[in-house]
Length: 205
Image (tube, rainbow, N blue to C red; front, side, top):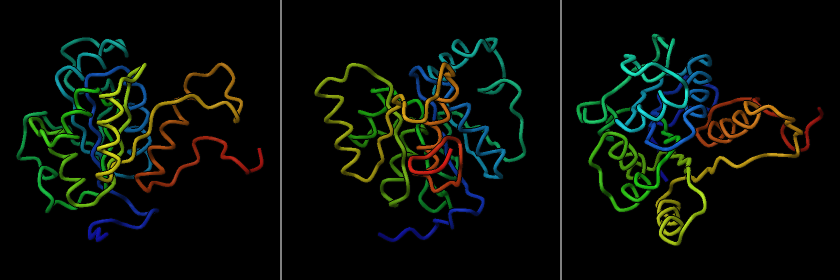
């Protein structure tokens, strides 16, 4: 499949991170910080509910200007969810990939059925039509038949589904952040971003 804008794995990338209204905002925060620290440019889009949930989960005062507290960076651009003039709302923008983390089942359903009524969903639609990496991090349990069918539809369309599951073989102990780093590492892998956030299978400790 032709991917004209895709860069080499080690080079700086232009990436979109969408945050929808599901639990798990700490994963998004860790992902964005890692990308910025690694020299990549992040286009961050949160839905209205996504921002409310993020601020609640991370004890960020309501009314805070940005999505995350104390995260101002020259390579971070935040976009409103209704701003369809964002460059990545079109396939002509040189965007290297996108992750929706966390991804609510409402967003999963919309993207699976081509409903692009906000910038997160439109950007995801662009990734699929342009054949670029789209990573979906669904947050729901248990999953019903509709959830599973929608995720199958996305996988068949070219998205990668990365559920935030626990890992045990690396002996994470009691650290929640080690589990978060594992999930973030798997997201980064599928965005083509080098990382060593966890001990990989078959390597020396």
